[in-house]
Length: 353
Image (cartoon, rainbow, N blue to C red; front, side):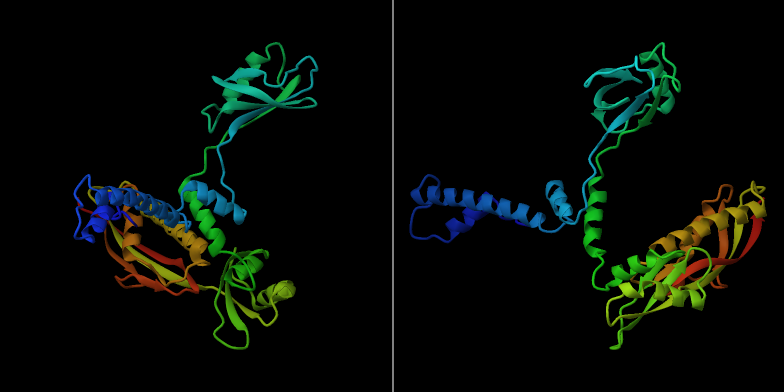
């Protein structure tokens, strides 16, 4: 932010405001201004650091971790791979810090609990060894003993440091999705914890009587009126005084799709298989929509372009034409309270040769 406040810029500003005295390099005024400009430049550098670390979207990792800790959102540091050996043959013993080599990785004994020995890899992070690699190496280390009879073992791979941007998003989310005093997140968590509720979308009250709508997506099908009434009864003790949610089913926007699949030569995929592949892709698109539906705050569209890309990404299809959604060659707007679902699918197969 203060990139323009360099030493030279500050010094020139100072000297330009002084008249009537010598201010060339080496003069008393020049040397005094140099010292002041140097200190001011340092202050501006520090101010840049402070400004960058005020908000979580620009904080460095050190400050971000401290901010996250306030919200009980902790940074996941790299952990070593771990092998635990539980011995039944008392002739098998290890001392603390005993090193063993498993699948070309060095492990050290870090914990002893009666007959259970825990070995941590000396290198933190994920290792490339598989369970079978560990098993083979253990058999060599414990030569003369039988796995399953003299000892049992488990292997848990390590983990890498959490991606900084992923952690940053978790910290930001902890502030923007904090449930309190009957806010939207409060109701997402309240009704979201009830059986068969897959997604929750509360709307702010527009009346003075405390009533407002909460739309739900059921994990399978839709809720009956009696089920919606019972859901409110089940949680009414937790609802803040003066708030009266009305539960409703999310609307389903049926999307009827029609298109012509074009092939440069004889089709390498039959019509039924093509329909099956497209249905799978469109259903995945709808499931992703439903996962994000609860926090969507703007109207969204099922775009014609996205549907065309689904078709073109089916192996064997060379081109596509005449794509329509609900009979029109236009994208379809989906209301905030609705989510899309595939309706009828009409496919025409066309070969260029």
